[in-house]
Length: 574
Image (cartoon, rainbow, N blue to C red; front, side, top):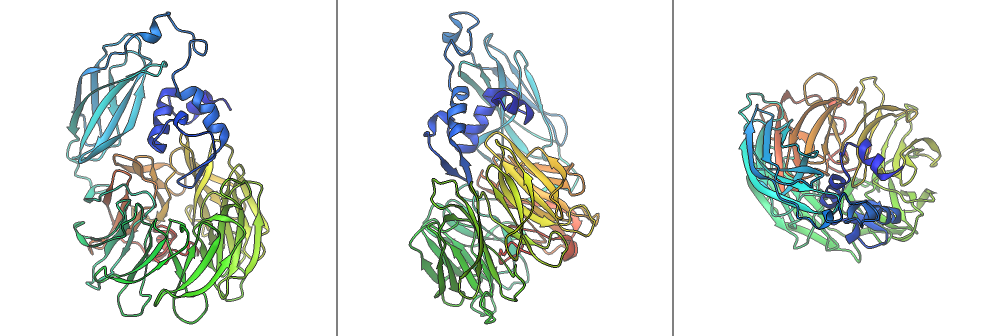
């Protein structure tokens, strides 16, 4: 499909805006990315992407786009001036400016949310000679700052100065900010957990940041209860359990320095640590009683191809198993073959990091022996999840494969149940399981994405048929009844927004704007003991946001997948 057609279909008005979104997502333009396969946020940038898109995202030569006059390419592009902002309502701000150029091809309007304005995201794009833009779906009583860039197809960009305005105060509770905590780095690889880790009878929020710290925040006001500095550049999602059986919930996490830490939930003190010989899958530790001794073990997937079972009490190694594949994803833990033993379901990007031969491998939890594996002619792209999605009383496994789409496999032997195709340029990313259409059968909610296109879709668990599609994403979803109607909603990051979707038809119910992307999963729970449900999410803008829903905490059956990998142990399974 031609790039310009792809851009139009996914909602961008111009190639220029796409190029800016690409740079925003990857921190570089395609021409700055080497001509090789790259791994970024679990997505593979294939060779054709950098080759084809470089011709669109770098200044064109005259023979590529005929100049309107021979001097036009060299003519300066004047920046907009007299930028002004005015609140129209509790959810809208109007941005106006003076057009000072006669050679622009349009204007990009950039937005950030105070106080996190280190970086901005594109709020919208308008065409030639347009001098105003109305930003919508904003939060009430919140200050936003804007900058307007003029651009043209010669690659020239001229930014305006900045103007800020606050939306009108909104009396509504739904989606309102309860508190905001600003960490020292962006939150990309860590999803929040909600638990009472210090036995004070109140829930805390536990989340990691790229500043290398794991934070435990007071659920009522967001202040720091304690934090632990790993000294690394990235921290995983936490796993929460009393692994040493001292009566306190412990916090387990990976760092980018190859370490697994076990921390006391009460004080944040280090109970034990384990250093691996290679990097671990940064999503999170996962845990269960895999050997049937009544105690929890932690499963660590090492990028070089090792799977290690660790004793939760002291960090000693129970067993190690080497699979013949590298770049292992976060495992799911479940008894997939019905023998009463917890199995380990793990996906691999490929035999080598630059090869196109992914695999899905199932190991016996007792000793790490391989039960079965499926190999593919392309790479797996995301963590597997497990559930009885066809209502036959047995577990199935769902995983994404690059260039094909999402697969559902029989847990007993790996036979294919169904395939949901996703064509390039979209790449399979995340999947979660829950009954979103209230038919008492499990559905699968999947996200797919790329730097220029994103999508959230709900699939019938029995046959993989599409129930609905929402053209934004690709954040990892959580599932729960957040509006008190007795039905499941889908809560996910959709670029720089946290969005709540109707689970039955995928329509947007409400959204909350941050300054930058939300990729990791939100968490749903009562964080301040008021009997009402809150939504907590971390953003690339370094903020941890706690949002009100105004709805009572629902029964557990209406919180089928309330956080990253479903539960505090991160098993990724029903």
